[in-house]
Amino acid sequence: MLIKNTCLVNESFQVERGKYILIENDRISYIGDKHPEGYFGETYNGENKVVLPGFFNNHCHVPMTLLRGYGEGLPLHRWLAEKMFPFEAKLTGEDIYWGSLLGIAEMIKSGVVSFTDMYFEIEMMAQAVSESGIKVNLSHGLSYNSKKPSIFELQGYKDTERLLDIASRDKTGRLKIDIGLHAEYTSRESLVREVAHYARERNLIVHTHLSETQGEHDNCKLKYGKTPAEYFAECGLFDQPTTAAHCVWVEDSDIEIIKSKGVVPVHCPSSNMKLGSGFAPIKQMIEAGIPVTIGTDGASSNNNLNMVEEIYLAAMINKGSTQDPEFMYPAQLLKLATINGARAQDREDCGSIKVGNKADLVIFDMDKPHLQPVFDELANILYSGQSDDICMTMIDGQIVYKDGEFKTIDIEKVMHKAVGIKERILSELV
Ligand SMILES: [Zn+2]
Image (cartoon, rainbow, N blue to C red; front, side):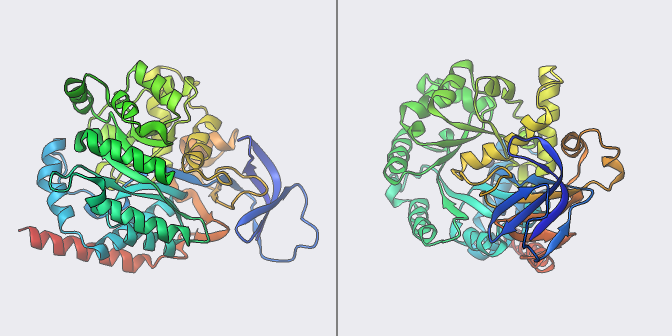
């Protein structure tokens, strides 16, 4: 497919106008000012459109879309114990499949081309990913179980091994498997060390939650005399590349550990505000040279998977909380949601619009009242754009969403299934 006469964000994250982009198979094969010679295939008129690199949502629990709005207003521990855990215990593999498709549809509609996820029944999630065309770094979040103290006894370990085998046969490269460790407060030192050892043996990216709440951070210091980051580093967990969600309560010494160990923090502004967790020191981490990424977290703590909104909030709350209007300028902000996310997922040929890269594109229609007039296309999109301005999402050269239509997901069926699952589980919980 050829996109003609369009505005694009180039690999240096600068806006260029009047460009042609040629997509052949799953990659970008040409970018230039002229119509490529000898091309007579499908052409898309890019006038009044802006082509951005697709977004990376680096922290999610996608099947939790099924729990959206359940147990609102409760404090965290009551919300988990009285609402989340009993509902989740009723979820079947098939439920997880439909919940994944629902969340993936929502992400695709807001320009997400790849996400990093931690949940369970990951084989069913992988099936939803495969059918939808999106990319994922998938992990089963391991927690300590006193009846099964060794990692090798845990279902999550068995699932990870099975999925690593499936991913090794996936020729598209869209499915990658990470190792998930849920958090410091749901594990024991023996399990953390086993996960660290396993990650090294299998050369896996680690996905975990880090210093999300003050209580969790302070309790860890009481228990071990160390912050969660110090504790994880000493257990060897950060010897492998690590994706660490939240990092709200990290201290100065933790930021040094994160930097020196190459840990990638995921900023989840909606979730942190909704659950009253606080504000992560994003500016301090970025100024230390840490490649921060952005995540929506699950839909039960956000309450949506709208990446356009998440990017907007990341800009606004960090400008506001640091009293620095120059921070999170458009190109800097977009890098967090694209190239930084791709690097965190170990996807070297993704995250920017350049010849040879995977064709992961999101196209914004600028013909909207809130996007006119245009002084700076990128500033308009990131500070004023809505996910409904997206007229196309392309992943690996495949159009998965165009002009309000999902090309790979039967959205009516998925929504109908989601309602049925909710009603069934509520009736079982009575
Ligand atoms: Zn999370």
